[in-house]
Image 1 (cartoon, helix red, strand yellow):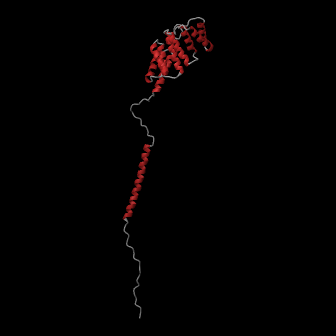
Image 2 (image 1 turned 90 degrees about the vertical axis):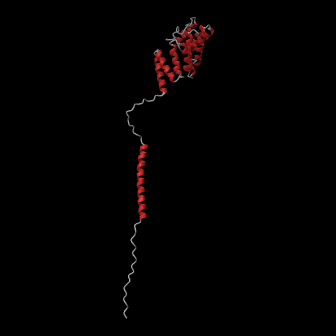
Image 3 (image 1 turned 60 degrees about the horizontal axis):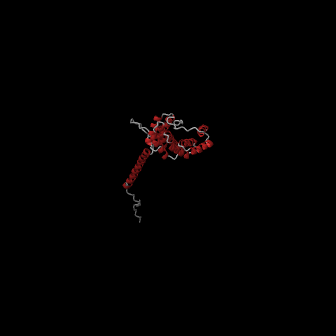
Length: 243
């Protein structure tokens, strides 16, 4: 009996169904792309901001008014003081006085300006304010040379006024500050001599003759020591106002 023929059954694996688009994945990729783009844009903006704030800006000239440079008071003071000194050395006392007063408007306790203003006033016979300026200079500085000069001029004022006791005291103060100021020492001797203190004056004369290197000063002292009277005023001695 023949075997029945059956159709051969072909076992073919089932074909998968067509895949549906993955919308979630597409959205994720799109989001990532947008994020990267935003980061790049932010980087560009940050770079522009850094360039704006951390680079030296270019100054653009304007047509507005130009402001003068600020001058420190110290520069004005020293400039006016030097101008006053130049005028004083040329005996232009009134003009020099104005310069020193300008200094004192800015710096009232400027010792040099007070001293030099006092000298200007001394040479104009304005002794009251001159004395006041010398006192101010003495109080406002520790500089021995300046204080010595102030006391010396105070002595000249009293000598000119023939107040010999007070003049001797002032010259003595000058010598205390500068022991080798033999001119002031000799003037102190002259004042003591004129005031009647001849013994004290002779002691000073001997000291000047023994120690001073100034031959002209020693000649003058030697003449007084030998009997000539000292000049009665600073003007008569050639060291008065205007001389």
